[in-house]
Every structure is written in structure tokens, then in C-alpha cells.
Image (cartoon, rainbow, N blue to C red; front, top):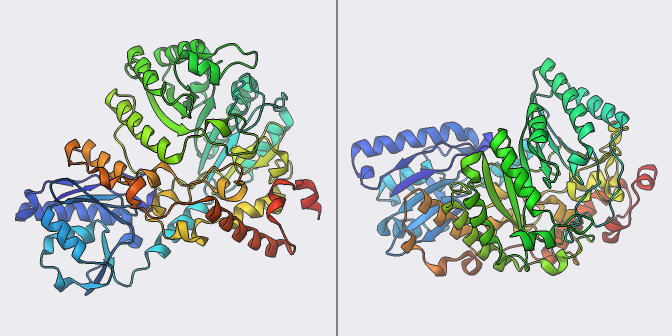
Length: 558
């Protein structure tokens, strides 16, 4: 049995790296090593993660076993992120525990039981794991000492990407000094603030970089005086991201930039041209190289994958490797599906790959990216991946005109704003605000019964609130589709299993180890539950069609 735990970033679920070889576990020294690893796990999990010695146990609901060729199984727990490789005999003993409660005395292999308890694979028979996960989620959601602001100094953009969820018609105005003043006042009004994170967004934020520079300087000055931890990043198309601009950004504590490149030159230039129709690939690659060579700014490449470019993504990885980007600075890649997440998503309706096809292809691309040094070893998500700006009480998206939203996928639509930065005391009063406040992943069976809920947390609140049937953009993340593949890949990366031990019949699209996935029907049912609660809160019926017809000013005055 090999015992491994994943490192985490979420304090409520933080664990330590630990690995114990199978042979070592069968002697006293090995047992002591395992006990020490377990103590580290339990110390960082805190009381919520502890399972004290008890007469009766049960297998954790969040355990996901993956059989391996030659006998044995990988055992992953989504709540603790513990990963164990069981021998064939140990796997049989584990499976024999079944779904019902069992006594400690019924397990003859005491070391196996100790490892299972230590990693959270086995918990006390009376433990309510769902309540523990929900408590961690709600505590994170309600944290008052942290604020995340996604700020768009302009919604203007010089690119004409056909699949953009913001649509083709974008305003060209830039953030005024009055809006900047109001944002600073909004931050100053939080006496308990200890952490401020800013993500610069657009449109293309560097088209409004004068406002970006000025507001950054003012926010940093205030945070330094108050000893508030300040961090920042930027999402940019990189047209303006030359070495000089990158240096200006880094001097303002913007440590990372996300840049989208969608294939080789011909493919990318077709999918992400300038609004004039001219290509953008060469200038982006030139700017990335200069930034890596001359500044410490980290570059993370997002590759949007759809029907027309999936065959070109592999060649793009070769191009990045040949350019030596990883040797020139901090550089990495990741993949995302092209999805029609809003009615304005244009060509995304035609570009969308079936989720099973997308996840199968992306698994291949991720493996190649890792082999080329463009991506690190796979890890389970830290904390709740669904604890985004939209779901957090301390997260807001602010447009250049001062409109305040909860999600950047609504910034192009004023009817979905939750208020204005000039009236901060009313941000929680609108129907739109209530939709976000009332949403929870714990009120629908698909999420609440999901085995990766402690990692996912619903993944995308926007899909639950505004995801219309015509968009067909479902919320379940890649981990839900590639559960077994990711678990096996992580174990392979750590040297716990070999590639030839993978069993194709364990593929998650077939076995669905994490449970049922959301469908358009289940998504609509979850939306209706939110609407029912919002209707009660506002004393009138908020129908499903109102999600796409409402004017916020009328709602606020009603």
C-alpha cells in the first residue's frame, strides 16, 4: 500500500505531502512513518476532518476507487485529497467493508484500517460528511477579511473573436476618475479587510491602462499603509503586452497574466483576429517572448478548444516547446472548452465539442503538455473550485462605468448587474443580488450527492443562475468527466503506478465514478429552486423568463 496526500491551498482542507512505500508499511518503522503522516494530515484538517477511535465506522461517501491492472486499486478521497494504492488483498478487504457501518474488530488488517482512517477514507459511522463539507463551504463564502475585485478599466476590445461571450458590440468608454474614486472608497469601507486581490479584466484591460496604473497605485498605497495583503493579475489578449508594459504591470504587483492562444498561426488568426480582420498570432508570440526574457511576469496560456481547432492544439504545444518559453521565464498552459455560456456567444454555438469528446482530447493534450514541460504534475483542486468571485460574498466585478456584477460573464449585460459602485450600500438589495445569494450547490441532488463536491463546490454558479437551455453550457468540471483518468494520472506522476496498469473500462465517461452529471433538466430544476427562494424574499413571483428580461433599475425601485 502506498499512501499519498495531495497538497492543498484551502485552509479548511489543507494536507501535507506524504508517501510511504508498500514494503515499509509492514514493519514497525513503516507503521511509525504512516502514523506521522497521518498526524500531519489530521493536524491540518482540523477538528472537522478528524475521525477519533470509535467502535463503528463507515466508508467515506467521498471515496473514489479506481481499479488497476494486475489487481489492486487506487483509492482517492475528494474531501481530504488522500490517495492510497491498495494491493489486491487490501482492495478486496476494502470492498468487503460495503456501504453499511462496520466495527473496528471486523477488520483483520489493523494497519490498513489505520491508513484508511488517517486519510479520511473511513469515518465514524455517525459522522455527517455532507454537513462538514457544507460548513467549510459556507465559512469560506462568508469570510469578511478578504475581498476579490475583478476590475474592467474598459469594456472595449481590439479583437473580434467570434465565440466571445460578451458579443461583438462592446462599449468603447474608459473608466473615469469618479469610478476610480468610488472603488477606492469601497475598499476603504471594509475595516476588517486583510487580503485584497485584484484581477484586471475587460474587454481588453490594457486599452484602459492609464486608469489601471492610477488605480493600482492608489490601492497599493492604501493597502501598504493598512498592512493589507495586496495581490493582482491580469487577463489580456497580449496585443499591448510588450516588455515595457509588462514591466509597468509587474511594478504594480501584477504577478501573472493570462493570455489566450487558440492554435497555430492560421487557426488562431481565424479565431482571434483584430476587429479589422488582421491576424494577431505573431505579435502575441513576440510579446510573450519579450515579457519572459525581460520581466518576472508569469504567463499562463489558455487554449480554448472547440470543433475547429482541436486538431491544431497539439502542434501549438510543440511550437511553445520549440520557442523555449519555459526556459525563458515562468510559463504554463491550460485548456478550456469553447462553450456558449451566454446568448451572445456567437460562433461558440457551432464550435462546442461534446463534453465527453472534449475531456478525452484534453486529457491527451494535458499529458503532452506535461511531457514537454509546459504543465506541472496534476493536482486535485485546492479547496472549492466553485468558490469564485460570483459565489463568494467578498467578490465583485466592476465595469468601467461603475456597474457592479457578481460574475464576469454578465459584465456585458447591464440588466444583470447587482448595482453600482456609487451606491455600495444597495449591492445586496436587487433581485439579481438575491439570485447569487440564494444559490447553493447543496440544494440539488446532483451536487449534494456528488463524490467530488468538496473539490468542486458547484463549479460555476453562473450556469445555475443564467444558463438557458439554448446555451447548453453545463456546470460540471473536467474532474467530473475524467475522475478516474485524473486520479490514475496523478498516481502515475508520483511513481505509484505504471502507465500499463491503466484499465480502459475504468474511464469515467463509462464508469461515472463521481456520480451523475448535470443535464439541462437538472440545471433548470436547480434554477427553479433558486427562483422560489428569491420570490419569497422579494414577496412576488420571479419567473424563469425574468432572468433574461429584467431591468435592474425597475427591480430596485419596485
